[in-house]
Image 1 (cartoon, rainbow, N blue to C red):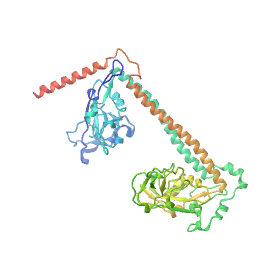
Image 2: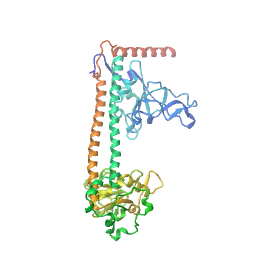
Image 3: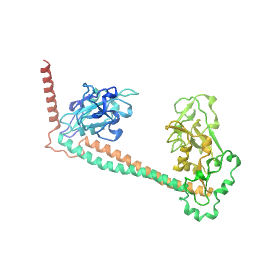
Length: 483
């Protein structure tokens, strides 16, 4: 192995400085588990999945009825997932107390020459997926884990490096937490902008200055075509009793009064892949999210008889998800980037608002008041999937103001959202820089650049020689016992 490390360091294999083993098969049956007892660690208890370095508690503990053949691993053992879904392969943790471990987890019990924390931090830099095989359930053989090249500095230097890592990571984590808090606050501010917009507060000063130019909502509604009013009643006093009071000249009405038409696509069997540029696609429900229309979230229509150009999604279309999860039912977007021939599905509606500004309705339906209307009118027996029909969409209650003020509201929202989006982009950049800094700290740690070397430290090769001598003595003792 090529060694480019400081003079007193060595590079060896993981199996040279740690006992590498697999965990235990999980006992079958509830009798083996209880409220109190030694921990039984499963993959979901591991590091990145819940953000903890040490395993201090788990969902499962073993009872005294657990098989005696199960091996208990000692405090300080470093754990790594060795099999499971590809997203789970790079989990690491340290046992904070003696515990049992499930067989999908590999263990590395370090020798006296290696700190558990040193080994833990180093293994977080190793991509175990490179050592695994298998598509659906990748698995890494323990023989491969034992052969992972591992740099070892003198023990005292390990302590200094680990202390420095944790000092720097602590400061880094504080900064990351602040950035994440700021991002959450921007989400709250976004909803506050929408709330003020549809309560008339966002344009209060503007409305006062332009009150002589504005028609009232009553005048606007008086000009609504008769065909839009079909099967729709005005909002009753009882319905408007529990929603915010509106400014003078505003009025609550039905969404259907402003809808010229709703178009739904068809549902049929497709090839579950994104269509090529010259093929016809059908939008998946995931194509309509809270961000932008995503034409790549589509499947391919292979039956030319099913192709109907009137279903093609066009730039400027107002798209509405009538069936989706509880969080996304009623999700709506206005299509911007359209480069492919993608048809509506039966779960994705196109709503035509005629000559009125569709962004007013888009922002309202994304506001908390709009979401409440959607949720109250959606149906479904399961909490995970909901549906809202066209008649119920038309009956959604919304605040109505003059067209001139609705245009101003859209302008104000977009200006403030632009600022929010710029701030979110800055936060994302800083989070990426933080992660890059974390990786830089680890890289310097394991190349001897993070702290100064002390020539008085016992060299790592002396430590390793002592470990090997102890292993040989233990093996000789075992041979004599067997004889």
